[in-house]
Length: 465
Ligand code: PXG
Image (cartoon, rainbow, N blue to C red; front, side, top):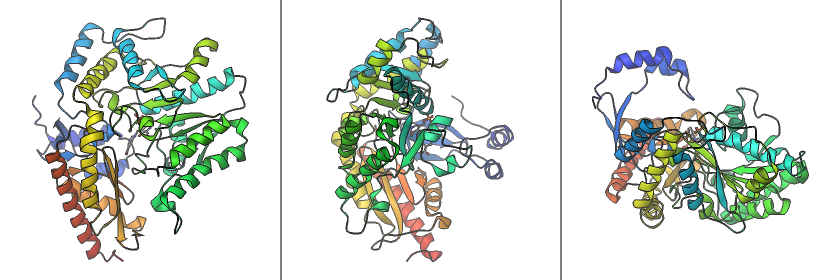
């Protein structure tokens, strides 16, 4: 395919007409967007011919890597057979039914929770809107309509629709648009590095942070609380990995008060943490599981909710008509691509590979990164990694927001052919699950080089303490 493009022409069309997500429009127009033109394996090329190693899998999406012909073939074949039909009026289609059965077979049963049903959407945000609808319907049907409040966490990301942004705990998003909407409230996040007390162990902090949920439930009155929603680990919030003690204590609390548990696995499912679904890794028992992104490796939009038996039973047996759904719920082309994507993941045993091989290898590499003078903490979970950049390695003193250390580092990454994501003073990665050891070495080498360059800048600017 011809990928030679006139960069200036595309940039001028872009700045004249395309309002980008989460972007200062005026600032972008002054610079001109970087134009991405093609991708292969773990690399993306821009319109100037520069190759970058994509350590973010697009945006936590491309778990099988770029350039998979099988996925294009699946889309082509389905488009030529049945490109679209709705699932509203007692109608289904072949890939949507097959994918639902496949997902049900992949989602493990934990304790008394099984996941045999799927509700489809086209994104993570929509899926979380569906969660709000299902949770409220569930309690209404059980004759407890006063159970309305959904508890979430500060610095969580659950999407950008009105409900998604409200469930999320991003202060910048709440500040625009009078959010959160009513009956959504937030507790603190389990971020030990930031919130651990002097002398407190990570294990003790995990129990204390989970305890904030119990405090909130008691403050609101348990009979008012519908559900707790959380990411297994916080992705967009900066790869915040909870202490081991956190999830078991959360499970105890939701069980004690009988509230529903929503596991938002938009980032963590489909092999990212070494399992098909991340609740298995942390050993908790959700009632609803949000997915999107890597279900198709991002090749085409698809999202949904795995609906556990507790909720499904009530919705199906007592619910009558559920007045909710989307034009693209069960889109045949998206579902066909998801089936082909899952086939690749099964054949190449990607969840297993993360669990047994590349996950531990990345952890070893991150231990080396943790030695760097700019890095106060470097940690991984499955095939996700995060590090905190600090002014002083021994005191762990943090940089000021005005210094924008993460953005300085991100700039060096871009210039040196690496895509890493900056979240405040944290640098994070979530690379394709197909990476070889040699590619992990290449990525680690680039990360260390960019840390050196960032350190030199910090030194030059007199920011180190
Ligand atoms: N839940 C979680 C846990 C997510 O990470 C969504 C819901 C929303 O999905 P959609 O498909 O509606 O975007 C997400 C999305 C980032 C970044 O900068 C992360 C996401 C989206 C945009 C940016 O890390 N995650």
